[in-house]
Image 1 (cartoon, rainbow, N blue to C red):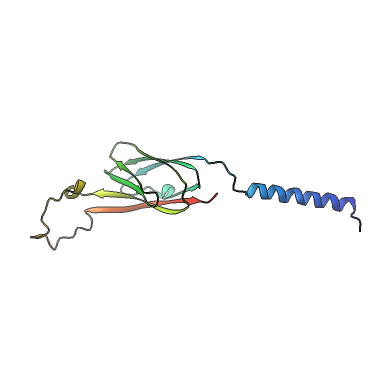
Image 2 (image 1 turned 180 degrees about the horizontal axis):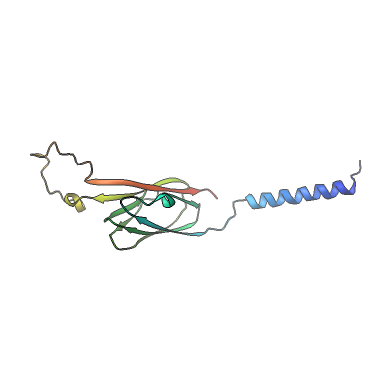
Length: 147
């Protein structure tokens, strides 16, 4: 059986397209430097930064400003940075673990800063709620996609 020249050309074209598709979908992408400017206002980062999406092995830098003192913590990576009103803090890391990781702000109340207790749990304030004294506020999620 012999193929006509037009079939050979079509078959060659299809093979070239398939090869390009396979190369384009391969995971040999070079890591990218990803920078995010997180501005925490009223304990939120806004819709544009509540989902940070990067690819595995990207170099990630978070520049963080806040209107309230506390700590920013990235779960799964166990990274944190002290954040202070009026100052820019920074977290840098290589996104080597894939998955979805919460990043949250830990806010200490005046009575609980750095582990100091200003009241007695055994006396008159037994019925007082301490729910908001050490607030952990989920600001968003870091999604690290596989290569």
